Structures are given as structure tokens and as C-alpha cells.
Length: 276
Image 1 (cartoon, rainbow, N blue to C red):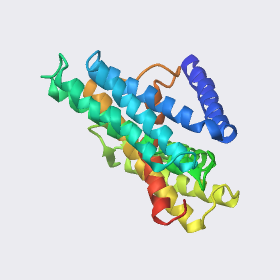
Image 2: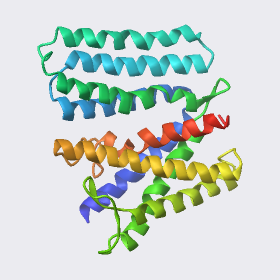
Image 3: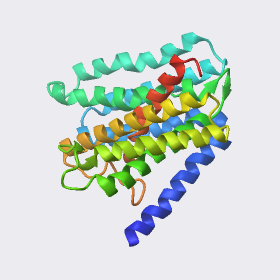
Image 4: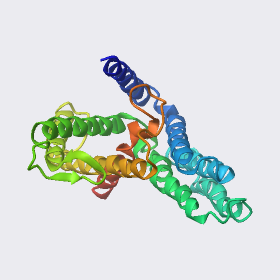
């Protein structure tokens, strides 16, 4: 009961801070986004690499920060597109650190460094594409995406608990997460679509209703993928949580794993149909 109370209190605090930042600090969003990316990458590398490749890890984080910042200022029309080259400089230096590193022959571990850049760094660095429209920053659409991710989690938990735990229920990926079922996916999609329609009715999602329904499906599917991918990583390393930054919830990566795949997928969908 104590753990549930702690989890609930810090869950409410986390949601409140997230919503407050996205709604009331639009011009500082790139700072918070870059900070969140660095915290997630630190957890990923700390668990995957221990004390190895410190210089390369710093350069990886610097790549993400510089790319995110430069893309932000390009989108807000404060600098020219040539500023995007700033993020490439530390990226090009990473192989140099590997060549002269004491761990240069542990090349298998170096794959974790590249994975962190692709899995966490890429989505974080490109978030200004979603956060800035026509030169004006806004976190409303991103907040809607988070709401739909939460709808997906709640729907999956409710229907998965009700129907997915029966003996004959088909499991989604039992080798990674034994409790997740296909019923949970159905429940997540249904509630996510319902949540998208509610946001459309409230005029928080400015797009045709059928795109809202499709967006709900896209977010639910890729939120599930993100959750399972992080579970696979933790199972491979034999750890329960990525960290202990949020009492009762684990680390930053535990809380934001679904968003690392769902938000980029939703952004790509909206970009294809020229909605953003």
C-alpha cells in the first residue's frame, strides 16, 4: 500500500510538471527536451556500459544537445540551416575516441553507444519538428501525444487484465513481457482512439476526425513497441528498472520509453499528410 501511494503521488507530480512545462514554457521546451534526452542516455549507458567509453558518451550527449538546439533555432527562424552542422562535429569525433580508447578492443560494447544515439538521441534531437510550427513553439500537440500514450497504457492494462490473463489468451511477446497479451493491444487501441476523438471534440487536436482515429492507432502500436524494446533491453541486462530517479516509477527511461517510438511515429504520420 505504501508503494502504491508513493507511486500515485509521484505519478501525479510527474504528470503535473510535464503538462506545466509543455503548456506554459513553450520558449524553453528545447532546454527541457535536451535535458530529458541526456538523462535517458545517461541511464542507458550507465546500465549498458558501466564506466566504459566516457569520452564517447559525453560526445554522444553533446551531439543530441547541439542538434536539438540548432534545429530549434532553425525552426524558430533565428538562425540559418547551416547551424545544423554543429551537431555533426561531436558525432564525427566519436570514432576518434574509440580508436585511442583503452576499450578499443571491446568493440561489441561500442554497439550500445550507437544504439543509445539511435534509440534515444535521434527522437529527442528531432523533436523541434513537432514543437515548432511556422516559427512559433508550442507543446500542446506533444501533450496530446502523451495523453494518448497514457490512454494506450490504461486501455491495455484494463482489457489485458480482464481477458488477457486467461489460460487460452494469446500473449503478445511472452519471451520479453509474459503478462502482455493481444487483448491488451486491442484495449489500448480502442481507448487511444476514443481519447483521440475526445481531444478532437475539445479542439485540442486540429485535424479531421479520421486522422485522429488513425493517430490513435499509430500511437498505440508504437507505444507498445517502445515499451517492449526497453523491456527487452532490461531483460538482456538482467535489471528491473533503468534507474530510481522517480520514486515508485523507476528511471526516466522507464517513464518515457513508449514516447521514444510513439511520438516520432505520430510526427511522421502528421508530416506525411502535411498536418504539421
